[in-house]
Amino acid sequence: MSAPEPIISPDTVPRLSPMFRLQWEEAQGCHVLLYPEGMVKLNGPAGEILKCCDGVRSIAQIIHDLSVRFPAAPTLPDDCRQFLKTAHDNQWLRIDPA
Amino acid sequence: MTTNGSVSTLPKPLWLLAELTYRCPLQCPYCSNPLDIARYQDELSTAEWVRVFREARALGAVQLGLSGGEALVRQDLEELIAAAHALGFYTNLLTSGVGMDERRIRGFKEAGLDHIQISFQASSEELNNFIAGNDSFKHKLEMARLVKHYGYPMVLCFVLHRHNTDHVEQILDLAHALQADYVELATTQYYGWAMLNRDQLFPTREQVAHAEATAHRYQEKLKGRMKTLYVVPDYYEDRPKACMKGWGAIFLTVAPDGTALPCHAAGSLPGLSFPNVRQHDLAWIWNASPDFNRFRGFEWMKEPCRTCPEQTRDFGGCRCQAYLLTGDPANADPVCSKSPHHAALQQQVQAIGETQTGAVAPLIYRNFRNSKRQMGIAAPD
Ligand code: SF4
Ligand code: SF4
Image (tube, rainbow over all chains, first blue to last red; front, side, top):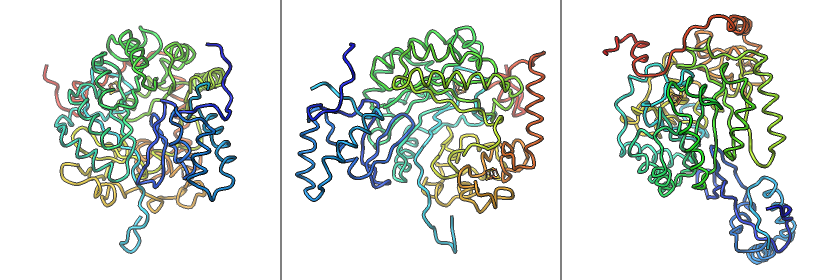
C-alpha cells in the first residue's frame, strides 16, 4: 500500500503495536512495555493512556474518557496528544486510518 | 550491600536466563558456554524449572531467556513456556532454529511465547555450515520465514568474528530480505569455547571499522523498518563495557544443572561457591549468597577502579575478562586504559592481528567429546 503515513488526528484509532506488551509490574510499581529482551518503564499517565489504546477508541474518545476519570488535570488533553505523538514516534503504536 | 548487617535497597533481578540444557546439535567454536559442558548433564526437571521461574518472578524478574545449548532439545519446552507465560514473564526463546518445525512454532505461540530469536552463523550457506559444524542454513531460512508468518517479533542474531565480519553487508541484506524487525550483530565474547579459539576468531581493527561503518549505514537506510544493534568489540576500545550492568544487579543465570550464576560466563571464576537451586531458594541466592554479593556494588574494587569517577558507569568492566587476562577477577578490566595491564593487552591484540593472515590452527568445535578432552577426561569412542 502506498498511502501516506497517517497523521495523528482526533479521529485516528491507535492500538499497541504487536511488537510490545503492556503490563503492570508490581516489583517496579508501574506499567511497563515489554519487547524482545527489553523493557520501558512508564510513568502513571503514560501507562493510563497506553491502556486506552485498544484499537477501538479514537484519540478524541480516549481524551474524553481520561478527562472524566481525572477531572483535576487541566492539561490532560495536551499532555495526552503530546504523549501519543512520542509513543507513535517510538513505534509503540499502530494507527489505522479512521 | 550490607551495612551493620542490615540490607539496604538490594537490586532486583530483571532478567532470568534459563540455560535449559547444554545439549546442542551445533558446534560453534565461538560458543560462550563453559568448556566443561559435559559436567552439567544432570538437568533440572520440568517441575524444578517451573519452581525456579516462580521464585524468580516473585523476586521481580520479568524477562525470561530460554536458552542453552539448544533449548529446543528439551521436549518439555512448550510446557515450560506455558508456565512462564502464566506467571507473567515476557518469554524469549534464543535458538539456532535447529530442531524447530512448524508444529513447534505453532505450539510455542499457543503456549504464550512472546519472541523467538534465531541465530545465524553467517549470510551464506557455505560459511554458515562451516562455522556451525553442520548443515543447517536452509532450514534456518525456512524457520525465519515461519517465525514471521506466526506473528512473532523477528530478531536475528549474528555472532561476528574474523570469518564473517567482512560480510556485514550481506548479513544485513539477508536480514532485511527476511523482514527482520531487529538484527543483533553480536560481538564474540571471549569466554569458554570462544576464548579457546580466540586467535582464530579475533577480527582485525580494519575489519571492525568496516563493519561498524556498514552497520551505521544500514541503521540510517532502514530507519523505522529494521533496527540494527552493533557494538564495537571492547578489545579495541579504551573503556570496558558495563558487563551485566553490574554484578548481581539485574541478571540471574541458571545453568542446566541448577547452578545459579550472576553471569553466564562466571562459572570459570575462582573462589565462587556456585549455589544451586536444588539446595537453596532463589531469594537467598540472589540476596544473601556470597557469590551474588562478591562483586556487587563498589566495595570490592581495587585501584584504579576504587577511586575512579567512572565506576558507576562501567562497574569496572567484566569480572571474567579481568580474571582471564590478569589472573585476578577483582582487577579493573584490562580493556580500560587506566588498568596497568592495558598495554600488555593491546600488544597481545596487535600480535593476534598480525599473525592471522598466515597459517591458522584449526578451530576447536564445541561438543561433548572436545569438552571431555578439555576437562582431561579421555573421550571413549
Ligand atoms: S553458540 Fe552454537 S554451539 Fe553454542 S549453544 Fe549456541 S548454537 Fe549451540
Ligand atoms: S578504572 Fe575501573 S571504573 Fe574507572 S573507567 Fe577503568 S574500569 Fe571503569
